[in-house]
Length: 451
Ligand code: NDP
Image (cartoon, rainbow, N blue to C red; front, side, top):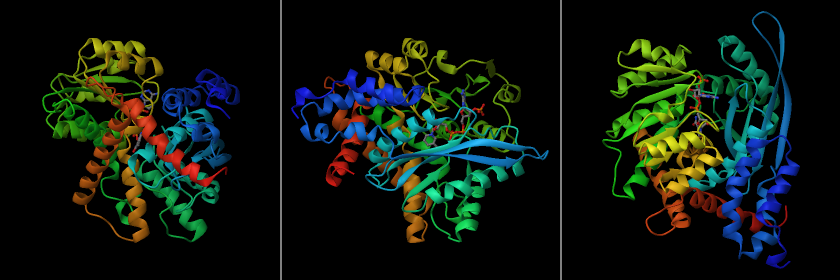
Protein backbone atom coordinates (compact mmCIF):
# COMPACT_ATOMS: atom_id res chain seq x y z
CA UNK A 1 0.00 0.00 0.00
CA UNK A 2 1.37 3.44 -0.86
CA UNK A 3 1.80 5.93 1.97
CA UNK A 4 -0.65 8.28 0.25
CA UNK A 5 -3.37 5.63 0.56
CA UNK A 6 -3.20 5.62 4.33
CA UNK A 7 -5.99 7.00 6.44
CA UNK A 8 -5.16 10.45 7.88
CA UNK A 9 -5.35 11.50 11.54
CA UNK A 10 -8.97 12.66 11.28
CA UNK A 11 -9.98 9.41 9.58
CA UNK A 12 -8.12 7.39 12.19
CA UNK A 13 -9.76 9.27 15.09
CA UNK A 14 -13.18 8.95 13.46
CA UNK A 15 -12.65 5.18 13.55
CA UNK A 16 -11.53 5.25 17.19
CA UNK A 17 -14.63 7.29 18.05
CA UNK A 18 -16.90 4.92 16.16
CA UNK A 19 -15.47 1.78 17.74
CA UNK A 20 -15.47 3.19 21.28
CA UNK A 21 -18.80 4.95 21.77
CA UNK A 22 -19.34 6.57 25.18
CA UNK A 23 -15.66 6.22 26.07
CA UNK A 24 -14.47 9.86 26.08
CA UNK A 25 -11.43 9.36 28.31
CA UNK A 26 -10.10 6.57 26.10
CA UNK A 27 -10.68 8.56 22.91
CA UNK A 28 -8.97 11.60 24.50
CA UNK A 29 -5.90 9.53 25.43
CA UNK A 30 -5.62 8.03 21.94
CA UNK A 31 -6.06 11.45 20.31
CA UNK A 32 -3.27 12.94 22.41
CA UNK A 33 -0.86 10.23 21.30
CA UNK A 34 -2.07 9.81 17.71
CA UNK A 35 -1.34 13.37 16.64
CA UNK A 36 2.36 12.96 17.44
CA UNK A 37 2.61 9.43 16.10
CA UNK A 38 1.06 10.31 12.75
CA UNK A 39 3.74 12.93 12.22
CA UNK A 40 6.48 10.49 13.25
CA UNK A 41 5.36 7.60 11.02
CA UNK A 42 4.53 9.76 7.98
CA UNK A 43 7.54 8.36 6.09
CA UNK A 44 7.77 4.95 7.82
CA UNK A 45 5.98 2.45 5.65
CA UNK A 46 6.35 -0.58 7.99
CA UNK A 47 4.38 0.99 10.82
CA UNK A 48 1.57 1.86 8.41
CA UNK A 49 1.51 -1.44 6.60
CA UNK A 50 1.43 -3.39 9.86
CA UNK A 51 -1.30 -1.09 11.31
CA UNK A 52 0.76 -0.69 14.47
CA UNK A 53 -1.03 2.33 15.97
CA UNK A 54 -4.42 0.81 15.17
CA UNK A 55 -3.34 -2.36 16.99
CA UNK A 56 -1.94 -0.56 20.07
CA UNK A 57 -5.21 1.39 20.33
CA UNK A 58 -7.18 -1.86 20.55
CA UNK A 59 -6.59 -3.62 23.91
CA UNK A 60 -5.39 -7.22 23.66
CA UNK A 61 -8.39 -8.00 25.86
CA UNK A 62 -10.82 -6.44 28.33
CA UNK A 63 -12.00 -8.76 31.07
CA UNK A 64 -15.16 -7.62 32.83
CA UNK A 65 -16.63 -9.44 35.80
CA UNK A 66 -19.13 -9.29 38.64
CA UNK A 67 -17.85 -8.79 42.20
CA UNK A 68 -20.32 -9.73 44.97
CA UNK A 69 -19.58 -9.01 48.60
CA UNK A 70 -21.47 -8.74 51.86
CA UNK A 71 -21.48 -5.47 53.81
CA UNK A 72 -21.44 -5.19 57.61
CA UNK A 73 -25.24 -5.13 57.78
CA UNK A 74 -25.50 -8.42 55.89
CA UNK A 75 -26.64 -6.82 52.60
CA UNK A 76 -25.30 -8.35 49.37
CA UNK A 77 -23.61 -5.73 47.21
CA UNK A 78 -22.75 -6.13 43.53
CA UNK A 79 -19.91 -4.25 41.85
CA UNK A 80 -18.19 -4.41 38.47
CA UNK A 81 -14.55 -5.40 38.13
CA UNK A 82 -12.28 -5.11 35.09
CA UNK A 83 -8.79 -5.93 33.93
CA UNK A 84 -7.72 -4.26 30.70
CA UNK A 85 -4.68 -5.97 29.15
CA UNK A 86 -3.62 -3.46 26.55
CA UNK A 87 -0.33 -4.68 25.13
CA UNK A 88 2.36 -7.18 26.15
CA UNK A 89 4.82 -6.71 23.29
CA UNK A 90 7.75 -5.86 25.58
CA UNK A 91 6.84 -7.71 28.80
CA UNK A 92 4.02 -8.98 31.02
CA UNK A 93 1.04 -6.63 31.36
CA UNK A 94 1.71 -4.23 34.21
CA UNK A 95 -0.41 -1.47 35.73
CA UNK A 96 -2.41 -0.59 38.79
CA UNK A 97 -5.86 -1.37 40.14
CA UNK A 98 -8.19 1.55 40.90
CA UNK A 99 -11.13 1.37 43.30
CA UNK A 100 -13.26 4.49 42.89
CA UNK A 101 -16.90 5.17 42.13
CA UNK A 102 -15.90 6.91 38.87
CA UNK A 103 -14.20 3.79 37.44
CA UNK A 104 -15.64 2.47 34.19
CA UNK A 105 -14.33 0.73 31.07
CA UNK A 106 -13.40 4.00 29.36
CA UNK A 107 -11.27 5.20 32.28
CA UNK A 108 -9.47 1.86 32.55
CA UNK A 109 -8.88 1.60 28.80
CA UNK A 110 -7.35 5.09 28.78
CA UNK A 111 -5.15 4.21 31.74
CA UNK A 112 -4.03 0.90 30.18
CA UNK A 113 -3.25 2.64 26.88
CA UNK A 114 -1.18 5.32 28.63
CA UNK A 115 0.52 2.68 30.74
CA UNK A 116 1.79 0.91 27.63
CA UNK A 117 3.80 3.99 26.60
CA UNK A 118 4.84 4.84 30.14
CA UNK A 119 6.19 1.37 30.84
CA UNK A 120 8.13 1.39 27.57
CA UNK A 121 9.67 4.73 28.52
CA UNK A 122 11.13 3.31 31.74
CA UNK A 123 13.38 1.01 29.71
CA UNK A 124 12.15 -1.99 31.74
CA UNK A 125 10.45 -5.06 30.19
CA UNK A 126 6.83 -4.31 31.06
CA UNK A 127 3.69 -4.28 28.92
CA UNK A 128 0.65 -2.12 29.70
CA UNK A 129 -2.50 -2.96 31.64
CA UNK A 130 -4.88 -1.46 34.17
CA UNK A 131 -7.83 -2.65 36.21
CA UNK A 132 -10.15 -1.89 39.04
CA UNK A 133 -13.72 -1.55 40.14
CA UNK A 134 -16.46 1.00 40.67
CA UNK A 135 -16.35 0.00 44.35
CA UNK A 136 -16.12 3.12 46.54
CA UNK A 137 -13.88 2.40 49.53
CA UNK A 138 -14.83 5.66 51.29
CA UNK A 139 -16.73 5.06 54.50
CA UNK A 140 -16.29 1.26 54.33
CA UNK A 141 -15.02 -0.65 57.33
CA UNK A 142 -11.74 -2.55 57.17
CA UNK A 143 -13.61 -5.87 57.11
CA UNK A 144 -15.82 -4.69 54.25
CA UNK A 145 -12.71 -3.68 52.30
CA UNK A 146 -11.19 -7.09 53.03
CA UNK A 147 -14.28 -8.96 51.84
CA UNK A 148 -14.44 -6.87 48.69
CA UNK A 149 -10.73 -7.40 47.92
CA UNK A 150 -11.08 -11.14 48.44
CA UNK A 151 -14.08 -11.35 46.16
CA UNK A 152 -12.35 -9.21 43.52
CA UNK A 153 -9.27 -11.47 43.56
CA UNK A 154 -11.40 -14.64 43.45
CA UNK A 155 -12.13 -13.75 39.82
CA UNK A 156 -9.01 -11.76 38.92
CA UNK A 157 -6.53 -14.50 39.92
CA UNK A 158 -7.25 -16.56 36.78
CA UNK A 159 -6.19 -13.69 34.50
CA UNK A 160 -2.89 -12.70 36.15
CA UNK A 161 0.47 -14.25 37.03
CA UNK A 162 4.10 -13.22 37.51
CA UNK A 163 4.86 -13.76 33.81
CA UNK A 164 1.39 -12.84 32.54
CA UNK A 165 0.05 -9.74 34.23
CA UNK A 166 1.24 -8.09 37.44
CA UNK A 167 -1.21 -5.52 38.90
CA UNK A 168 -0.30 -2.88 41.50
CA UNK A 169 -2.13 -0.14 43.45
CA UNK A 170 -3.67 3.10 42.20
CA UNK A 171 -6.40 5.40 43.56
CA UNK A 172 -8.16 3.64 46.43
CA UNK A 173 -5.73 0.72 46.43
CA UNK A 174 -2.80 1.03 48.83
CA UNK A 175 -0.65 -1.42 50.80
CA UNK A 176 -3.64 -2.61 52.86
CA UNK A 177 -5.72 -3.57 49.82
CA UNK A 178 -2.70 -5.14 48.08
CA UNK A 179 -2.16 -7.22 51.24
CA UNK A 180 -5.77 -8.49 51.22
CA UNK A 181 -5.59 -9.34 47.51
CA UNK A 182 -2.17 -11.02 47.76
CA UNK A 183 -3.46 -13.10 50.70
CA UNK A 184 -6.42 -14.28 48.66
CA UNK A 185 -4.30 -15.04 45.57
CA UNK A 186 -1.93 -17.11 47.68
CA UNK A 187 -4.81 -18.93 49.32
CA UNK A 188 -6.48 -19.84 46.02
CA UNK A 189 -3.37 -20.80 44.05
CA UNK A 190 -1.11 -22.06 46.85
CA UNK A 191 1.68 -20.09 45.18
CA UNK A 192 3.82 -17.43 46.82
CA UNK A 193 4.94 -15.47 43.78
CA UNK A 194 5.40 -11.89 42.62
CA UNK A 195 1.93 -11.50 41.19
CA UNK A 196 1.22 -8.06 42.67
CA UNK A 197 3.53 -5.14 43.37
CA UNK A 198 3.22 -2.48 46.04
CA UNK A 199 3.36 -5.26 48.62
CA UNK A 200 4.49 -4.60 52.19
CA UNK A 201 8.15 -5.21 52.95
CA UNK A 202 7.36 -8.29 55.07
CA UNK A 203 6.12 -10.29 52.08
CA UNK A 204 8.16 -9.26 49.06
CA UNK A 205 7.57 -5.53 48.72
CA UNK A 206 10.27 -3.15 47.58
CA UNK A 207 11.79 -0.26 49.48
CA UNK A 208 10.72 3.20 48.20
CA UNK A 209 7.71 1.92 46.21
CA UNK A 210 5.29 4.25 48.07
CA UNK A 211 7.57 7.24 47.51
CA UNK A 212 8.59 6.44 43.93
CA UNK A 213 5.84 8.11 41.88
CA UNK A 214 5.86 11.44 43.72
CA UNK A 215 9.66 11.52 44.04
CA UNK A 216 10.02 10.56 40.39
CA UNK A 217 7.71 13.38 39.25
CA UNK A 218 9.90 15.84 41.15
CA UNK A 219 13.11 14.32 39.75
CA UNK A 220 11.65 14.75 36.27
CA UNK A 221 10.80 18.37 37.09
CA UNK A 222 14.36 18.87 38.32
CA UNK A 223 15.66 17.40 35.04
CA UNK A 224 13.54 19.81 32.99
CA UNK A 225 14.74 22.76 35.05
CA UNK A 226 18.36 21.59 34.86
CA UNK A 227 18.11 21.54 31.06
CA UNK A 228 17.52 25.30 31.41
CA UNK A 229 20.25 25.75 34.06
CA UNK A 230 17.61 26.15 36.74
CA UNK A 231 16.72 24.19 39.90
CA UNK A 232 13.90 23.46 42.34
CA UNK A 233 15.52 25.25 45.26
CA UNK A 234 13.64 28.47 46.00
CA UNK A 235 10.65 27.59 43.79
CA UNK A 236 7.05 27.83 44.98
CA UNK A 237 5.06 24.72 44.03
CA UNK A 238 1.31 24.26 43.67
CA UNK A 239 0.28 20.61 44.12
CA UNK A 240 -3.15 19.00 43.83
CA UNK A 241 -4.23 15.80 45.58
CA UNK A 242 -3.29 14.65 49.06
CA UNK A 243 -2.82 10.94 48.47
CA UNK A 244 0.23 8.85 47.87
CA UNK A 245 1.58 10.75 44.86
CA UNK A 246 0.83 14.28 46.08
CA UNK A 247 2.30 13.90 49.58
CA UNK A 248 5.51 12.31 48.32
CA UNK A 249 5.88 14.95 45.61
CA UNK A 250 5.50 17.62 48.29
CA UNK A 251 8.08 15.83 50.47
CA UNK A 252 10.68 15.74 47.68
CA UNK A 253 10.04 19.40 46.78
CA UNK A 254 10.80 20.34 50.41
CA UNK A 255 13.91 18.12 50.47
CA UNK A 256 15.21 19.88 47.36
CA UNK A 257 14.68 23.34 48.86
CA UNK A 258 11.35 24.23 47.24
CA UNK A 259 8.15 25.43 48.91
CA UNK A 260 4.87 23.52 48.31
CA UNK A 261 1.95 25.80 49.21
CA UNK A 262 -1.16 23.75 48.34
CA UNK A 263 -2.70 20.27 48.53
CA UNK A 264 -6.25 19.20 47.72
CA UNK A 265 -8.84 16.44 47.74
CA UNK A 266 -12.26 16.01 46.18
CA UNK A 267 -13.65 18.53 48.72
CA UNK A 268 -11.37 21.47 47.85
CA UNK A 269 -7.81 22.72 48.40
CA UNK A 270 -5.73 24.13 51.24
CA UNK A 271 -3.37 27.06 50.78
CA UNK A 272 -0.49 27.45 53.20
CA UNK A 273 1.46 30.57 52.12
CA UNK A 274 4.29 29.79 54.56
CA UNK A 275 4.80 26.45 52.83
CA UNK A 276 4.27 22.86 53.91
CA UNK A 277 7.08 21.46 56.03
CA UNK A 278 8.01 17.78 56.33
CA UNK A 279 6.17 17.70 59.68
CA UNK A 280 3.00 19.13 58.11
CA UNK A 281 3.23 16.67 55.21
CA UNK A 282 3.56 13.79 57.67
CA UNK A 283 0.42 15.05 59.41
CA UNK A 284 -1.42 14.97 56.06
CA UNK A 285 -0.22 11.41 55.33
CA UNK A 286 -1.38 10.24 58.74
CA UNK A 287 -4.66 12.14 58.51
CA UNK A 288 -5.61 11.10 54.96
CA UNK A 289 -4.29 7.55 54.92
CA UNK A 290 -4.67 6.25 58.44
CA UNK A 291 -7.44 8.42 59.85
CA UNK A 292 -9.18 8.61 56.43
CA UNK A 293 -9.74 12.33 57.13
CA UNK A 294 -10.39 15.32 54.86
CA UNK A 295 -7.83 17.89 53.70
CA UNK A 296 -10.12 20.68 55.01
CA UNK A 297 -8.97 19.74 58.53
CA UNK A 298 -5.48 21.01 57.64
CA UNK A 299 -6.71 24.61 57.85
CA UNK A 300 -8.03 23.93 61.37
CA UNK A 301 -4.75 22.31 62.40
CA UNK A 302 -2.28 24.86 61.01
CA UNK A 303 -2.89 28.57 61.53
CA UNK A 304 -2.16 30.84 58.60
CA UNK A 305 -3.54 28.33 56.11
CA UNK A 306 -6.94 28.48 54.42
CA UNK A 307 -9.36 25.94 52.94
CA UNK A 308 -11.14 26.67 49.64
CA UNK A 309 -14.18 24.46 49.32
CA UNK A 310 -15.00 22.95 45.93
CA UNK A 311 -12.04 24.63 44.21
CA UNK A 312 -8.81 23.45 42.61
CA UNK A 313 -5.52 25.22 43.44
CA UNK A 314 -4.53 26.45 39.96
CA UNK A 315 -5.18 30.14 40.62
CA UNK A 316 -2.57 30.27 43.37
CA UNK A 317 0.59 31.96 41.98
CA UNK A 318 3.54 29.58 41.68
CA UNK A 319 6.74 28.81 39.79
CA UNK A 320 5.99 25.12 39.25
CA UNK A 321 2.84 22.98 39.37
CA UNK A 322 2.31 19.27 40.04
CA UNK A 323 -1.21 17.95 39.39
CA UNK A 324 -1.29 14.75 41.45
CA UNK A 325 -4.99 13.94 42.03
CA UNK A 326 -6.84 12.50 39.04
CA UNK A 327 -7.61 12.74 35.30
CA UNK A 328 -9.02 15.94 33.74
CA UNK A 329 -8.61 18.02 36.89
CA UNK A 330 -6.82 20.87 35.10
CA UNK A 331 -8.71 22.63 32.29
CA UNK A 332 -7.91 25.31 29.73
CA UNK A 333 -8.76 28.21 32.06
CA UNK A 334 -6.68 26.69 34.85
CA UNK A 335 -3.73 26.38 32.47
CA UNK A 336 -4.15 30.03 31.40
CA UNK A 337 -4.22 31.07 35.07
CA UNK A 338 -1.02 29.14 35.79
CA UNK A 339 0.80 30.58 32.79
CA UNK A 340 -0.53 34.08 33.52
CA UNK A 341 0.74 33.87 37.09
CA UNK A 342 4.25 33.01 35.96
CA UNK A 343 4.35 29.22 36.25
CA UNK A 344 7.32 27.97 34.22
CA UNK A 345 6.99 24.19 34.54
CA UNK A 346 4.28 21.55 35.06
CA UNK A 347 5.05 17.95 35.98
CA UNK A 348 2.07 15.58 35.97
CA UNK A 349 2.09 13.21 38.95
CA UNK A 350 -1.42 11.98 38.09
CA UNK A 351 -2.47 10.29 34.85
CA UNK A 352 -3.83 12.74 32.25
CA UNK A 353 -4.76 15.44 34.81
CA UNK A 354 -4.53 18.15 32.13
CA UNK A 355 -7.25 18.03 29.49
CA UNK A 356 -6.45 18.51 25.79
CA UNK A 357 -7.11 22.26 25.92
CA UNK A 358 -4.86 22.72 28.94
CA UNK A 359 -2.05 20.85 27.20
CA UNK A 360 -2.48 23.11 24.16
CA UNK A 361 -2.22 26.21 26.41
CA UNK A 362 1.03 24.92 27.94
CA UNK A 363 2.46 24.07 24.53
CA UNK A 364 1.47 27.43 23.01
CA UNK A 365 3.07 29.24 25.96
CA UNK A 366 6.14 27.01 25.49
CA UNK A 367 6.48 26.37 29.19
CA UNK A 368 8.07 23.10 30.34
CA UNK A 369 5.30 20.49 30.44
CA UNK A 370 5.92 16.87 31.42
CA UNK A 371 3.01 14.50 30.67
CA UNK A 372 2.16 11.85 33.25
CA UNK A 373 3.40 9.00 31.10
CA UNK A 374 6.92 10.39 31.50
CA UNK A 375 6.78 12.26 34.81
CA UNK A 376 4.93 9.69 36.93
CA UNK A 377 6.69 6.58 35.60
CA UNK A 378 8.86 6.31 38.74
CA UNK A 379 6.20 4.25 40.52
CA UNK A 380 5.85 1.60 37.89
CA UNK A 381 9.62 1.57 37.47
CA UNK A 382 10.10 0.59 41.11
CA UNK A 383 7.25 -1.90 40.65
CA UNK A 384 9.28 -3.38 37.78
CA UNK A 385 12.25 -3.61 40.12
CA UNK A 386 9.99 -5.24 42.74
CA UNK A 387 9.23 -7.92 40.12
CA UNK A 388 12.97 -8.43 39.57
CA UNK A 389 13.62 -8.68 43.30
CA UNK A 390 10.78 -11.22 43.69
CA UNK A 391 12.11 -13.33 40.81
CA UNK A 392 15.58 -13.32 42.27
CA UNK A 393 14.25 -13.73 45.82
CA UNK A 394 16.35 -10.81 47.05
CA UNK A 395 15.90 -7.22 48.23
CA UNK A 396 17.84 -4.18 47.21
CA UNK A 397 18.64 -1.52 49.82
CA UNK A 398 16.93 1.83 49.95
CA UNK A 399 20.13 3.55 48.82
CA UNK A 400 20.48 1.27 45.80
CA UNK A 401 16.86 1.84 44.80
CA UNK A 402 17.08 5.63 45.24
CA UNK A 403 19.98 5.65 42.79
CA UNK A 404 18.10 3.37 40.36
CA UNK A 405 14.98 5.58 40.52
CA UNK A 406 17.02 8.70 39.73
CA UNK A 407 18.80 6.89 36.88
CA UNK A 408 15.50 5.72 35.41
CA UNK A 409 13.98 9.22 35.57
CA UNK A 410 17.14 10.62 33.94
CA UNK A 411 16.82 7.97 31.21
CA UNK A 412 13.17 8.88 30.56
CA UNK A 413 14.14 12.54 30.32
CA UNK A 414 16.88 11.68 27.83
CA UNK A 415 14.44 9.65 25.69
CA UNK A 416 11.98 12.57 25.67
CA UNK A 417 14.74 14.95 24.60
CA UNK A 418 15.71 12.65 21.76
CA UNK A 419 12.32 12.91 20.07
CA UNK A 420 10.98 16.15 21.58
CA UNK A 421 13.72 18.72 20.94
CA UNK A 422 12.06 21.35 18.72
CA UNK A 423 15.12 23.61 18.50
CA UNK A 424 15.41 27.14 19.86
CA UNK A 425 15.56 25.78 23.40
CA UNK A 426 12.00 24.35 23.37
CA UNK A 427 11.43 20.71 24.27
CA UNK A 428 8.04 19.23 23.46
CA UNK A 429 8.00 16.58 26.20
CA UNK A 430 4.58 15.29 25.13
CA UNK A 431 5.82 14.54 21.65
CA UNK A 432 9.10 13.15 22.97
CA UNK A 433 7.36 10.77 25.38
CA UNK A 434 4.76 9.65 22.86
CA UNK A 435 7.26 8.86 20.14
CA UNK A 436 9.89 7.25 22.37
CA UNK A 437 7.27 5.03 24.04
CA UNK A 438 5.60 4.15 20.75
CA UNK A 439 8.81 3.30 18.93
CA UNK A 440 9.92 0.73 21.47
CA UNK A 441 6.57 -1.09 21.53
CA UNK A 442 6.07 -0.75 17.77
CA UNK A 443 9.47 -2.21 16.91
CA UNK A 444 8.77 -5.25 19.09
CA UNK A 445 5.39 -5.68 17.39
CA UNK A 446 7.00 -5.50 13.96
CA UNK A 447 9.32 -8.33 14.96
CA UNK A 448 6.38 -10.57 15.93
CA UNK A 449 4.51 -10.26 12.65
CA UNK A 450 0.74 -10.18 12.60
CA UNK A 451 -0.34 -11.64 15.96
P1 NDP B 1 -4.66 8.19 46.23
O1 NDP B 1 -5.91 7.41 46.29
O2 NDP B 1 -3.59 7.96 47.23
O3 NDP B 1 -5.00 9.77 46.24
C1 NDP B 1 -5.82 10.36 45.28
C2 NDP B 1 -6.01 11.81 45.65
O4 NDP B 1 -6.71 12.44 44.59
C3 NDP B 1 -6.81 12.02 46.89
O5 NDP B 1 -6.36 13.18 47.52
C4 NDP B 1 -8.23 12.20 46.34
O6 NDP B 1 -9.10 12.92 47.17
C5 NDP B 1 -7.93 13.00 45.09
N1 NDP B 1 -9.00 12.83 44.12
C6 NDP B 1 -9.48 11.67 43.60
N2 NDP B 1 -10.48 11.92 42.75
C7 NDP B 1 -10.63 13.26 42.73
C8 NDP B 1 -11.49 14.14 42.06
N3 NDP B 1 -12.41 13.67 41.20
N4 NDP B 1 -11.36 15.48 42.28
C9 NDP B 1 -10.41 15.95 43.12
N5 NDP B 1 -9.57 15.16 43.80
C10 NDP B 1 -9.68 13.85 43.61
O7 NDP B 1 -4.11 7.97 44.74
P2 NDP B 1 -2.64 8.17 44.19
O8 NDP B 1 -1.98 9.31 44.87
O9 NDP B 1 -1.98 6.85 44.19
O10 NDP B 1 -2.93 8.51 42.65
C11 NDP B 1 -3.13 9.86 42.20
C12 NDP B 1 -2.96 9.91 40.70
O11 NDP B 1 -1.64 9.46 40.36
C13 NDP B 1 -3.90 9.06 39.87
O12 NDP B 1 -4.14 9.69 38.64
C14 NDP B 1 -3.08 7.80 39.63
O13 NDP B 1 -3.52 7.09 38.49
C15 NDP B 1 -1.72 8.42 39.40
N6 NDP B 1 -0.60 7.51 39.57
C16 NDP B 1 -0.40 6.87 40.76
C17 NDP B 1 0.68 6.03 40.91
C18 NDP B 1 1.02 5.44 42.23
O14 NDP B 1 2.12 4.89 42.34
N7 NDP B 1 0.19 5.51 43.24
C19 NDP B 1 1.58 5.72 39.77
C20 NDP B 1 1.34 6.53 38.60
C21 NDP B 1 0.26 7.36 38.51
P3 NDP B 1 -10.22 12.16 48.05
O15 NDP B 1 -9.49 11.65 49.25
O16 NDP B 1 -11.22 13.23 48.37
O17 NDP B 1 -10.78 11.07 47.18
